[in-house]
Structure formats: C-alpha cells, structure tokens
Length: 194
Figure 1 (spheres, rainbow, N blue to C red):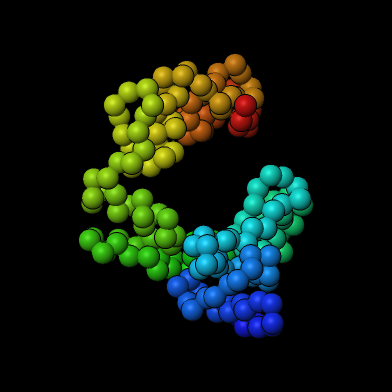
Figure 2 (figure 1 turned 60 degrees about the vertical axis):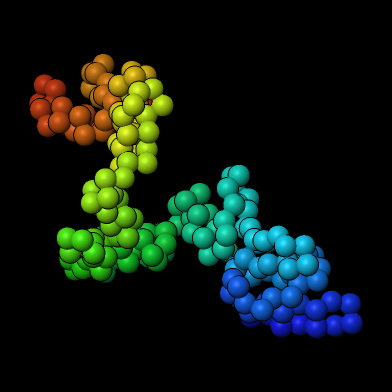
C-alpha cells in the first residue's frame, strides 16, 4: 500500500484496480506488483520484472523468482510424500493433490472434479462446444491448443519425437511410448525430442 504526498506530487495507490488512485507523475510510481492507473492521461501502467537470464518479463517479482529457478535448477519445495522437488510452492501444492486425491475445481454442469483450474476450463469447453483453436491449414478446430498443434503436424509432416534405438520418428510423444513398450532386441528405449 502506498499513500504519499508532497508539494510536487500526489500519489495514492491502494494496490487495487479501480481504487481511488490519483497519480500525477509516472516516474513517481513506487515498485509494487499491481497495475496502477494514471488518471490524468488515462493509461494503465504495469510494473514488469525482467529476467536477466532471458528475454521474458513478469507481472510480479514472485513470478520472476520462480522463473529464474528454471535457469538455476533450484527446487526448494519438497514433497513430503515422495521424492519430487519443485521450483515453485504453487506447483508443489498442485502436485500434492495427486497424493491426496483433492479436486477443488468442480464443473458446474456435470460436477466432475479437477485438481487444476486450467483442466477445468478445458473440460468446460466440452459442454459449451467451444473450439477456439483453429488449424491454419484446414477447417478443423479444437478445444485444446495442444490438440491443434499435434493435428498441424499431419500437414507439416513434423515428427519431433525420435527413438534413440532406431530411425523411427513420431509426431506424438505417446506414439513413441507405445513403440518403446516393445524393446528393440531386449533393450530399454529412451525418448529423445528433436
């Protein structure tokens, strides 16, 4: 929360969109994670945190910290029920639902439960019939972006999943897993992404 006044400026930020915000000078906005509105010019100013490891930027410092762990490999959040570690606490929380069976996100049409909100949103497109992902080569549309990407490989011929034991390549990761269920000459097959 910021509430500051002086003879040259008058800044009131209550960390909420649509709050009574009166910002006189853009440069005087102190760093915080919520968007603020400069009413006298009518533009929204969002603080961005940029990674010094890559070209990505984030709307909060905590997101940047979590992202930077992908570069360092740091995984400070440990599951107390298995050996997995995570770079973000939120990811650990979602993972722990695999152990507890908790599914806090319920479909309001069929009561099916989900451990992740994004999976609920995708599921709800079944009921609405919405298919927002359109193939850029044909008329097919999909409810899931990943399904559209896999479909587009039928047009491009792209096969990014290659067997490490032979020359076969596949358009879907699941196909190489099916092939690896039958080992080549009794060996275990490993998956390699091109």
